Length: 308
Image (cartoon, rainbow, N blue to C red; front, side, top):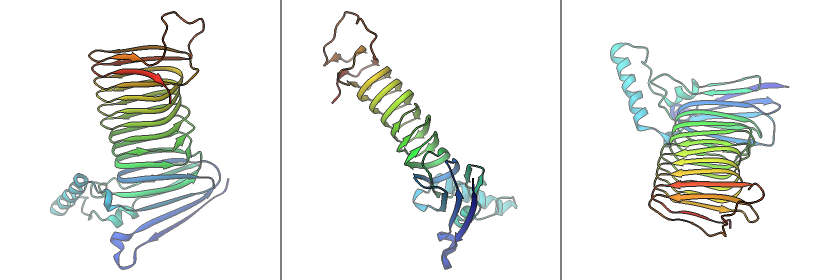
């Protein structure tokens, strides 16, 4: 395994405070473990079919968090008044320069500053790494986007949207307030959103998805799935195999069953209607069904139909 590093800082000429851009390149073979932590801003990870890694950091004023910026200004003022350690200005240039970027073995770490004066400065983190790399993100207030095929995913942001293309390993995605949009998750998924929708193109393996007030949508299901939402709708466009368990307090349930699939269905609604657009039989099948569907809604409708 070869490893070299090239680092450059663009100070932006006469306007360095607003234009500082930091770029690091690592010449290394094989997939990487990407470990990214930031207070606010945005994260974009592009996984491509070529070796090496490239990291770019810059100030991102468009993703400024007003509360975090106010806190930074307050701590700077307090430091100036009382001579505390936090006397530095909340400078975007300093936030970029003081961020940590390093590679140890196959683990690439990116950390933005944690000091109270700088943690609220929004930073845009852009990384290009080999396809199949594993991604770990921890963010306070940031949108997180990944493109290309990842290995394992562990993405968490307190506020912000999360968008990914695909993962061949187990995926864990959490946001306190934001939308989750995922591509194909082949080895299982655990996703949580406090107040946002969750959309998943396809899942295999064991999957658990929950949201407080958002809707949940799956394109294709080929594995065990448990779904919980307080007031959102639950939709599965095409279910082929597995055990599917859905509960919503006041939303609607709609499940499409792929043609040729033998399914066992148990749907109920407390104050709405539960019905099937497929032919059903009360006689137990001679063979075990490949698909079991259970759905509960407090006041919405529940429908099982044929996948389009």
